[in-house]
Length: 434
Image (cartoon, rainbow, N blue to C red; front, side, top):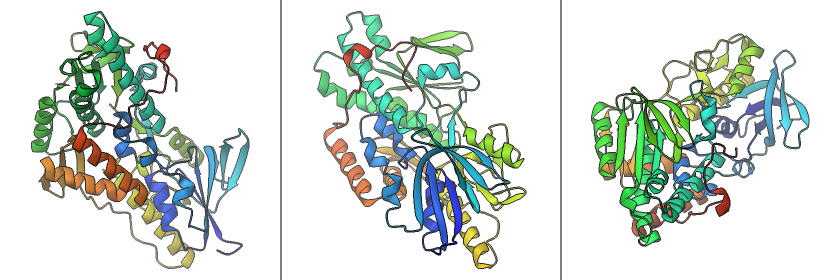
């Protein structure tokens, strides 16, 4: 790296941002990765942290550790809050509260997405999302506390309310979470409470306004997934729209019916990171109805060839908002940058190579659609595990995750059953930290 190396600032250390940074290893550029968290989060396994299967560190390697051998890359812990595209600078608030203007020659924004409550952000206090590591750890405490409170409850009605877990959203996250919670209740808890709690009374209710689970999947796999969930004891209630959420449960349309539940999890929708709106304002770019930035075919912001955006925060055709496209986009943008610097012809428009869609349904079952090849059952589970281990960063993390999976499959025990709050704080009210 020369003293006057081309400055590349990457905002976001998710799948896309980190893929771009690593693809620039060896290039004559100075890469600065900015993220408000010090870790890269493997979101596809976040629900396993929430259900006491995996410890947080197994799916969240430190960004500095991931880039430790990349001498042209530095990491800055801070939150990007704005852009000055004329001055080619990113405004960053550092972890100590101070502000810094970070200059760039090329900017890549990969800020991801956040949860959408469809105009009802007040529901967030009781219907917790699952997008961050903190969300998952708090949900783990909440689930385990619900079982403890149910075991201690003397009123049967109150006990049933604690034993009802409502999950809003029947996409991959909701399906995976519902299957794991049901398995945890019926296998793990049976041995732990010894007569204080009947695991068969745990109600896991999966709710969605759509007419099927896993809408992006082929009909055959959707039907199989629904049957598998029901065999696990999950109540799959489709065509029911949530119209209200409070600390005692959810209200449903049509009919204004009510589902009493002390634990409500939100996995019903996402929208682009608020940073996408800031980028659009700064560059004059357009956004779609979900707040995603409309980018050019090479992932650059129209009219600003030195500014790129990738991942869940952009709209580029019908590309799904999952890890694989973000990784491919990050590597692609790195090729564009190096080609420009070398004065060679840049690659053509970005093309997403779809390697399939997968979701796990239970500890021993998963469904997958890999280029028209439909897999399910144990074969689907093995394919799902292989793909996830491939994307998971670091051999230590991969080995640790396999060890936890093996332990759980062999014994039914989950090693991460830790509640963070003391007993006096475990009764859920209308508010929640975060």
